[in-house]
Image 1 (cartoon, rainbow, N blue to C red):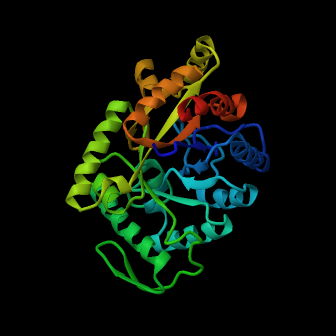
Image 2 (image 1 turned 180 degrees about the vertical axis):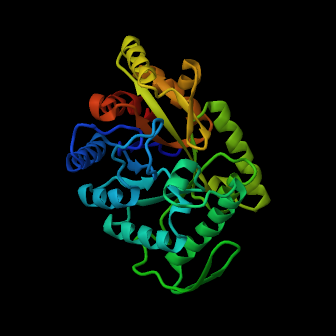
Length: 336
């Protein structure tokens, strides 16, 4: 069986997860400490979200930008891979993204995992002055963007004439350290369009949240798209991104769940910047929840379905440091 890997999504403010009473410089230092700690604890990779406005409540709070922060973390870490979960294609021209990614791979000594998706958070699009086209167009743009990025990583000069992007004599040096190029992770669950883009371009497919049944369905449909584009599905690594609510005892887990609900985190995005409350059952359904043994059993169900990479977000990481408990007690149970 392929080695199971674990990544830690480091708090950067998007989920209201940085200490509000600290000045930004000290908030950044907490990001650095958590990233270093993740590497020390044995996590294989460090991940950041690519978002600007906080969720599930929109507040005037710090959110550290993904690419700038990862560049800083590249200088502060030694071994862990560095990734985006995931870059919103709409926020940067793909030729600029190719350049940013190349430089980050050089700075980090070849540790980049390039995560990208079509984008979804309309409130941010409008707030930052981006058009928010229908999903089919955003996914079409993603398809072209990944093609451009791959070529700019590997070709001396790139000309591209697409429906959404046009490049004339684009030059990108330095090239990435990794050869032939950094691995590409594509995230999303759209079954008709997104998974076809995954089948065409991705080295890693990531599903964000859901049940084993959800994961099984997405993988089955991905394999169908692979057949249609004549791609071996075994070439695509399967990853799962999820929130983890973990405690040493069931009583501790119940207390943490109750705190999160009381603080308003039991919400789901409904579009146009609107987050609506969901039931406790729905809230727990989209996460891995329990004691170390219970969390391990839940994650093993995804391993049985082919997942070999888990990208994890821990609620209240900085206050409770539950990622340490997971590294100490859950990872050995899954890798055993």
